[in-house]
Image 1 (cartoon, rainbow, N blue to C red):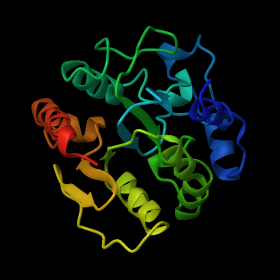
Image 2: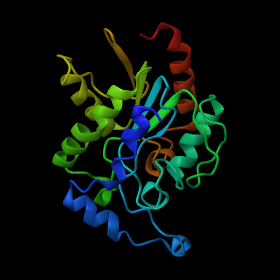
Image 3: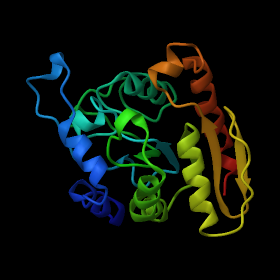
Length: 225
């Protein structure tokens, strides 16, 4: 087992943020999931630990990752994202329904800024700081083949820039979909809206646009540091 995989195994035991611990353990199951046992723990990263692309999300969903124990699994965001990863050759199947469903990611690793589901999908700044400094920064450092980072949403984008400021002086560029930011000697940064239903159902984030962005990142790979 490589060092990143070993590190990910430590994440589910975390209880650093009392508000998040209380909330994740009291999420009321949806009727269609009432016979399932919810995960109710921090959700570790998932994917190819030797991958060159990091996909960075906000946090587990209450009835997605917090239920299944795997990021982007068992909800509508997962349906959108994993299908796009399949279309661009990063995933071996179109769906992500539950742990051990056969999903394999190649070339990319997924993780979240905050490892626990937050109330109203809004972690507090101090929770973002604690989780990022404890887990995210270490995950990034252990991705030894990292060439590019795709941030899903403003919070993930802000969190990655906060990480970059811990290793140097970097001027933040305003967020916009499809943005590419280059750093000398560091992985390139790309930005997308989060694949949540509020973005995909309204047409703010379209499947074809997201797939095109992933294809552009893949085509850029030869020029990435």
